Length: 140
Image 1 (cartoon, rainbow, N blue to C red):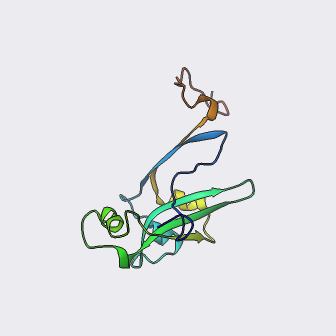
Image 2 (tube, rainbow, N blue to C red):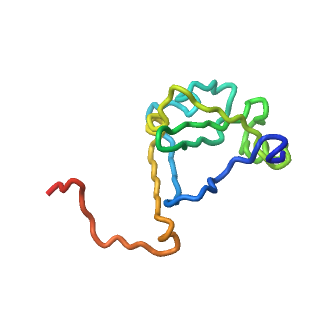
Image 3 (tube, one colour):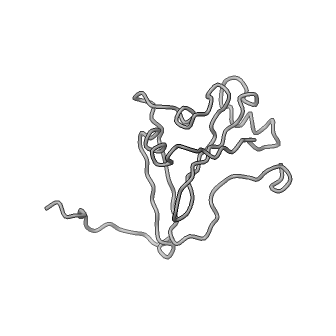
């Protein structure tokens, strides 16, 4: 699958930014919580979510879901390598722009633990040591 003929490869952002970092999310499984598909109105019996993305600009942020049609999902085991092996080493997905769901309400609904760490670009390769802690406003 080439980037220009048959879609595009989805991956990490390569945009220039004044802040860069990483996010890690552990999805809720210990208490009743919606699946990603349920949270956005996607049929879980028809789609398997591979990824999601929240992005946008100064005025608004959008939520995108990347999902594999269940017709491409083999039975049992670790399905993602099997899907890729059957599709020239790639996982073919449909990108859904989700309307009428607040991206941050979605994030909160599916999250057990979430961490987002951003660093100013100028500090990317330097160690940062926390030497004191405080509260805003001061909780004195």
